[in-house]
Amino acid sequence: MNRKKSLSTIHGYAARAPGTPLKRQTFKAPKLGENDVRVSVTHCGVCHTDVSAIDDYYGITKYPFVPGHEIVGYVTAVGSAASGFKEGDRVGMGWQGRSCMKCEWCLNGEEHLCMDIVKAATWDPYGGFSSSVIADSRFAYHLPVAMRPEVAAVLLCAGVTVYSPLRTYTKGSGIKIGIVGVGGLGHLAIQFAHALGFEVTAISSSPEKKEEALGFGADHFIDSNDRDALRRVEFGFNLLLCTASGGVNWEALSETLKKKGKLILVGFPTITLKPIDLVSHELSITGSFLGNRTAMKETLMFAQAHGIKPKIELMPMSRVNKAIQRVKENKARYRIVLVNKDGA
Ligand SMILES: [Zn+2]
Ligand SMILES: [Zn+2]
View 1: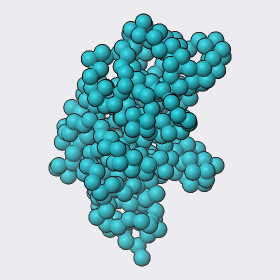
View 2: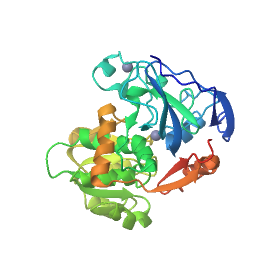
View 3: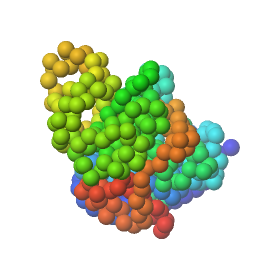
View 4: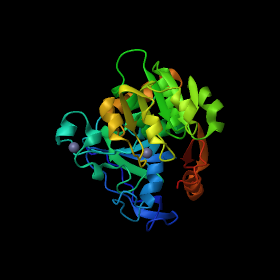
């Protein structure tokens, strides 16, 4: 039986061209695929990726573009082949809303690396700054009952982005980690790394964030402009997780890695490193992208079990342009979540 419910139109906040403000528009509701769920959006986080995509930073944005990929809402329709969901279920989705399910990466359970990843975004055709979205049910997640919707929304992108590498690249005990950048990603990374039992040093170019970073669970704080402080932790860290997008002295930072240490990037900063440091200390550098579906579920469960919560500013979805401006100006503390009070 096809349990598809009809929905003729949706409302979404859309950019018509790169860099233009979002305007509320009506669109024909996308067709529900057999594996899809349709979700009425109650909350959607504002991620740097949304802001960059509005400006077509990645070169893949199709206009009109409705951003939004940290989505929480209620299932309103279930495709004929979708299982595990029923109308009224509270669910969340992150950046990835589907995948090809047949490339080597999908078959290997690493669907976040799908060869068709450009077509996998939840915002295709319309993202979560809207009244309703569709996604493949295999990329929709039931939420812990007690978890607040705005908390879940942020964990579904920012949360998994930092949790996944912290789990993947840490083996053994006595691990010392430097979290570079105390922002939307960094303040969550500190909480996850602390809860995972690592010794955590927050490294930021904003010394005024020290007390807050310690409050999130950092054991130490270093001002990244303080060369002496960085020298004192030479060969100190097994791993540096870089959540910052700029303002980092890479050469000074790489000296804080232990031999065989790893620098993991989850943002897109411009970096310069001296090959001699990489070679002589056998350092490595890697990127980390979101996480697979298992990591998504684990992120939610682990955060719930350990009381990990993003610090959030709630704003009505109608103020989406103001929210984007705050993110652009680096003023969000630390994450903005839009609340769909007006049916978008
Ligand atoms: Zn994101
Ligand atoms: Zn694939």
